[in-house]
Amino acid sequence: MRSLLHSVKRHYYVPLIGLIAFSILFQLTVLLRGTVEEEAADIWLDLQIRASAAGEDIVPFLTSDKVADLLVKSIIQIESSGDPTQVGAAGERGLMQIMPGTWNDMTRRAFGQVVSFDRAFEPELNELIGRHYLAYLQEFLQEHRSAWRADERALLLACYNGGLGRVMAAGFDVRQLPRSVQDYVARGSALHDAYLADEEDLIQQQVAEQALIGAPRVRPDI
Image 1 (cartoon, helix red, strand yellow):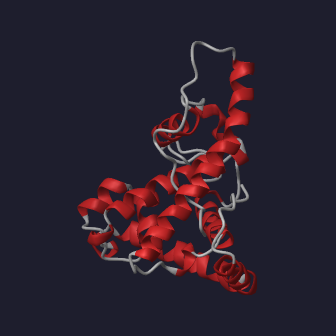
Image 2 (image 1 turned 90 degrees about the vertical axis):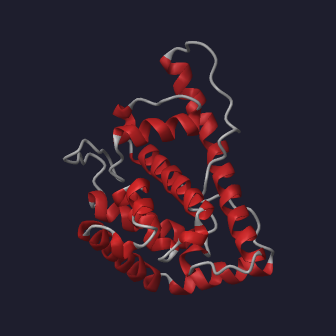
């Protein structure tokens, strides 16, 4: 999934200058989003290339954009059952049930400043910010790859559900996490595997095409 998820460079966003009227800010946000998505795709691909060059195993779900999309689909199904109006017990909102603090951090990284949490109910924007958060989590995991005691998909799901701090404290070992987090990982993995089975032919075709043409930098469909 070359880039489902992949990270957003911390330095490439140009901060918005001054106090801009809401309507102008909205237009700038729309214009910037394409750049954000393309950059995320590039970074995700770069991570894969570096891992491959180092002779490291890349887990199957990181092999095509379609596979990445299906991981997002799995998370959305678990978090909100596809209901963009969903509100969680802790205040999380939207398709990917994003917490206020995560929303503020990720929108600041993506757009140069915080986007109102009221917009977390917008399906496309919520999914975009959820993807950015997954990209951020994956970049973090790649930086600690030598400490892993589980595969990357399991750790991504554990981080999404339980948080980075908890996963670090558990030594990157899903077995040491609370039962609720382990159950989330198991459910997400099973759902993702089911989606993968349904799309097996298409995914294999994507992987073969990417191998043939040198894995070009293709922007994910968001």
